[in-house]
Length: 345
Ligand code: SAH
Image (cartoon, rainbow, N blue to C red; front, top):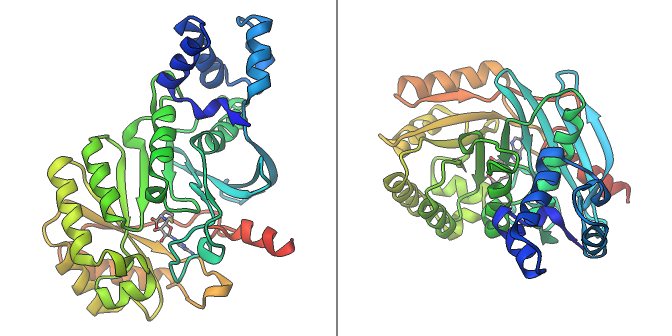
């Protein structure tokens, strides 16, 4: 069954008109979903019983249910949700000093096949609907409502490749970003992609204020193709050209994500190649501590080694940061909690 969360603000008003209702009904339903954040259609008390019955016959509010929740000492909370078809997905709530950020899953499994990533241990089964992405944020927001706290940031960095599910991801973000939705500011929203060039071009043309993060992870084609199969389709020269087109259309600073893998991409030569690759572009490198995935055989670096790489980049004139680790005492790596459940059967 479709979820009411699948409609963005314009679509729910169109739906109301199609039903022969006033457009305002759509607006009211949206208010119930995103302002009152009701969990049951019957709570929409300014709708007639007839209207509520019609909605109940055709729609769910949330298409997901909680299966498991893990809370780390630093407050990082990992949610395992089951979708209506039984598929399992993960979302993560992270606490920062600047606010609360939700990491959203965009697909069940992933086809990108990155060598180090737990998400690709299972092939993509399907794309998430936009409602299933909205529902991840709403579930967590409803929990926070009890404490009068709010989700202030969103990162589309859970399982899946958001640019392989482009329309649904953009629709989801339209709803959470909308003033009458959750009103999460566009500059507080980050989409991370492994580098699907045609979609980077499409995204550049949308002229949104969302942040774009690119999973780079290697500074040369030989290594990047080994770590990330997408590089065989869109090698670095094509990726960097797309980032330049994006830069020409959008005056936004890019994030380049770089997981430090011990002995693989963490040597001084890699820092030099990375600096040369980035050149004078408006970008900064986010160095990511690797969450070891048992099945993958890669190792991360310790903080001291990360600092060495960081210093090398800084000396070469590359702006960079080291991502703080969150929830390291729970199944924190992308897709780990889900994979554990799938293995348990
Ligand atoms: N498919 C998108 C978004 C999901 S992955 C992308 O590739 O960007 C989000 C980020 O987490 C990516 O940079 C990804 O490479 C990184 N990542 C994957 N597995 C990881 C792990 N075990 N430890 C740390 N980062 C990881």
